[in-house]
Image 1 (cartoon, rainbow, N blue to C red):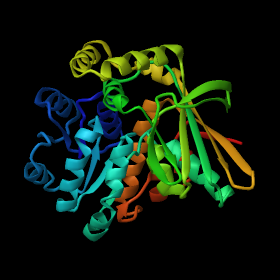
Image 2: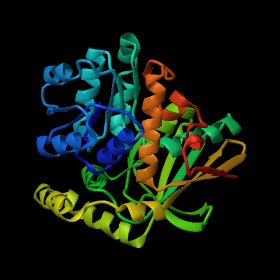
Image 3: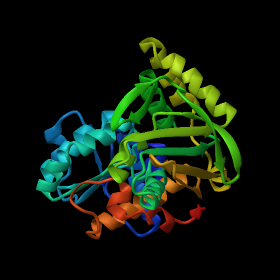
Length: 341
């Protein structure tokens, strides 16, 4: 089941799945858009909200795996994970939200008992950075600090913008001495040596603050974004609105009216770059970078690859990060990805 296929990224995933010969159950809360896509693709569909756990569980009848594409995931993942555990259905999503990943990790024992895989964040958030973190951690086994950075440019989808709006009032987050801590927004800045050249980047509350800890065991983790001036201006504007409930509502309506997501041509012309560095108490350092397809294309490729691996029985029961579930080389199996030493 693909839930949230009425959204920008969910629709891309559904279209690619169908092009590969899959016939997933398309699901979501909006009957009009779900029915239209189902008729176009010849896939079965189900329309339901996530308010009632019993109803969600009923709609999982005959389903072996759910890929949740409906964000903000803080509003959808807890209910869906609970229902999946009750129904003994594997759960995946494409979140990049720290608290959602932490919530999934807290369900590890129940997932193991149910014999199902719970693997959040199988998209751009956070597959490439998670795999890069594990690669680096294995090069420097006693690493105490991990820094991850990525580039972003161009347009974002409505779902991405709404998620940004959702998490912005909380400020920044970093992992310090093993604990996730609140830090100011734009807490630190640094120059990052991306493959295309150095760029200034600032800290953001990226999902690896949670996931990379479970993948590597490294106790100090900072995550950075190097974005275009337009993206940074939009982020600052959204942050101001996010602090006031009334203004946040206005911003949500503006997002729905004004943001449509990148076009196919924009996605094809774009790419993403990621850089990571680990260091230990003796001053040893290891660093590497990845170049990938644009974030939305990589999300489609990674999410469907993860679905295929879980359905083939190649993921452990319980909670896993993508790198732990599928291996640190997982990202390198995705078209358009290369490692830069």
